[in-house]
Amino acid sequence: MSDLQAALAAFHLLRPWWLTVVPIAMLLWWGIRRRATRPPAPPKGVAPHLAAALTLGGTGPRRLLPIDGIALTLALLALAAAGPTWSRVPNPLMAQTAPLAVALEVSDSMQATDLPPNRLERAKHKILDLMAARGGGRLALIAYAGSAHRVVPLTEDLAVLKPFLEALSPDIMPSPGQNATQALDLAAATLAEETTPGAILFVLDDLDRADLPSFERHIAGKGPPVLFLSLASRDAPGGGLPGGATVVRGTPDRSDVAQLNRRIASAYRAALARDERLDWADKGWILAWPAALLTLLWFRRGWTMRWALLPTAVLLGGTPGTAQADGWGDWFLTADQQGRLAYEAGDFAAAGERFADPQWKGYALYRAGRYAEAAEVLARLDSAEAIFARGMALVRSRDYRGGIAAFEAAVARDPSHQPATRNLEIARAILDYVERAREQSDTGEESGIGADDTVFDNAANRGNETRATAEEQMAATTAEQWMRNVDTQAADFLRLRFALEAAEARP
Image (cartoon, rainbow, N blue to C red):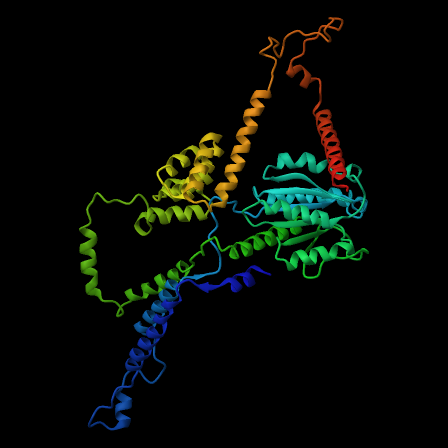
């Protein structure tokens, strides 16, 4: 479904009773214009042919009248007041891009060289390009062959994803095959943990026929939307892809990545429109702009009440000099309106400076990464949503105890607040992990052994005396050797973890 079709499907009016103004405006327009365009009565005592010759203006079509602009302005304002909408207002504390679970086929068929250097390497480049194009959107990576395994959980850090992605090859998979059904279940489970609606992307060369029923059931069950990036030749044999699925063919350039990004964004907006927890975004302000332009016609000669300019000038001239505007926006928009425009434009730092409403000011500061300031602003409010937002800001600033206290207060105020309940569990787990890590950490300093102290190979002092700093060890290893070691370690780690997961899954 295209963006236009999705918008038309979700279109409705928030306040439809305002439409009653439209027929009233049309009746007013019809009555006044009919009277204004009525031909004048012929003068008495003058022959009709002489009266027609002496009448100025002729019988051509009537020009535009003031009532035309007034009626159209009233109709536009009535439609704006009716609140047309076709999209939801995203939760400011949620990610503004859809989380994406990428399932990469790591089978022997992906080693084909019809796409140089091979299909698998081309798929890896496409995933990295997609993550860069999404501008910080979170992505989880799943690898599958005969079994499916989560490589990296949802992350927005390309540096975390890249070494594990590059280490994937059919050699590290526990068993050969193309078990896309298991990959679909794992991707759906990954997205089920998120409050933000997400999407699933399969990067593959083909789909086994045995997996088609699983995808058809998933699509019929209204699960997260599934997209396919196909890297196989169009005439390649195989099971094909599900009917009605969103399929993007791989291209030599990045046009396929751009198309995927648009499809994912469209699916995200469609999912938001189905989320009943979110408010609808009132788009009536769009119609206010043409209505404002039409009012400019009121100042046309012969159309305006020029006497109204005098009291207007008196009122403007009598305004106290202390009320000065810092910019043109202050003349037309309130501080919250200016903040909202900056927020929607993605300039969260400017929005945090302009908002007067403390809740939205705290949201903007949070999105700008100024967590301590956001927590301070939100501390003035006592609603469950504001307390939850303050807890998020405290956790982001690594004040886990303060975040836990805030989440507990939010749950106490609103026991049905699921995000607060879920993040309370996460914050407690983080604090427990940090405290255990501190207890278990041992740098050797407590036992009197420093990083650069002299040590021996064994307790009998039979080894060679050695002294090596971290800088010397790094200097002895070239950058190429370092990266090769990292890649090897990642591949070995994934091979071992995948084998353990496959063994545990066996009955």
